[in-house]
Image 1 (spheres, rainbow, N blue to C red):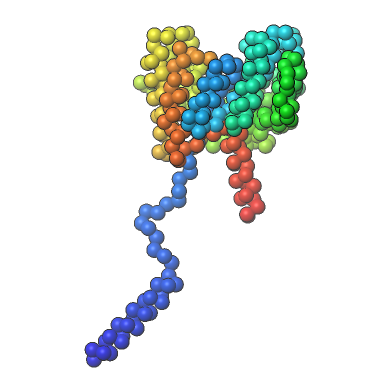
Image 2: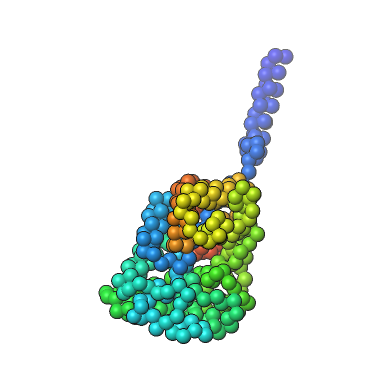
Amino acid sequence: MLRSYRVLAFSLASLAGANAAFADPPKSPGASPARPKQVVLISFDAAREISQWERSRALAKRTGAHFTYFLSCVFLLSPDTRQQYAGPGKAAGKSNVGFGASKQDVADRLEQVRLAAAEGHDIGSHACGHFDGKDWSKADWLAEFASARRIFENAYAINGISPEPPGWRDFARHAVTGFRAPYLSTDKALYEALPEAGFQYDASSVSNGPELPPTRNGVARFALPLIPEGPKAKPVVAMDYNLYVRHSAGTEQPAKAGEFAERAYQTFRAAFEAQYNGKRLPLELGFHFTLMNDGAYWNALERFAGEVCVKTDVECISFRDYVARQRAGQAKATAGG
C-alpha cells in the first residue's frame, strides 16, 4: 500500500511538472508598463548676448541638456549691413530690437551658433526685426521667413566675415525647422505660411497647462503652459519675462533678485513635479538672454536644470529632437501596422 502511494505521488508530481512547463510564467504582483521619461523643453528667444550663449552652452554640458535657440536674424547684421533687412511694411534697416553691435559681434555670434549646433542644440527662427505680426498676411509672413533664411545663409558674405566655415550655407539652409513668433503674437495667416515655408514645428502658443503638441497641416504646435506661481499659486506663462512682470511689474529690482530667483525656482520645480509624478506630459519653459532682475531667472534655471536634467528618467531635449522622435515613432507604428 505504501509503495502504491509513492508511485501515485510521483506520478502526480510528474504531471504537475509537465503542466508547469506549458503554463504561463507567474506575473509579479503590481507589475505595470515602464513609465515614459519626463521631457523638459527649454528654449531661449532672440539669442543675442555672446556671454549668454556661452553660459547656456556650459549649462548644457554640465547637465546633458539640449536647448532650442530662437534666433532673431537682425543680430546677424551689423550697423553697416542693417539695410539688408526690411520687415513687412517697414523701411530697410528698421528693427524693434536693434542689430548686431559690430562686425566682430556678428562674427562671434555666428561662431556661437555654429558651436551650439555642433553640440546638438536646435537653432530655430524668431523671425527678424521682432515686429508684431498679428495683422500680417500670409505673403508678409513668407517674406519675413525668406529674409531670415537669406540673412542666415549668407551672413558671412553679407558682413564680409572670412573665412566662411565649410558647409555653412548647406547647414543654414537645412538647420532651421522651428519657429516662435515675437510677442507670441500669431494670426491665421501665420499658420498658413508655416508649412509652405518648410517649418516642422511652431512654439508660439500658450496653453492652460502642459499638453501633448498637436500636429496640424504637418506642423507640430507647442505651447508655453500656464503654471501656478507664488504664494497664491496664480497661473503665469512659463517664461522668464512673464515672471519678471509678475514679480516687479517689468522694472528692475536687483535688491530682491534672490527672492525672485527662489520664487522662480519653486515655480519651475512644482510644475516639473506635477508632471513627473503625474501624466509626464512634456514641460516647456521659455527664457531670454536678457538678465532680468539681476539674472534671477537664469539663476533659477541653472539650479532647476542642474537638479532635474541629470535624472536618469528625465530628458531635457530640444523641440527639433522631440518632433523627430515623434515622427519616427509614428512612421514605425505605420510600418508595423
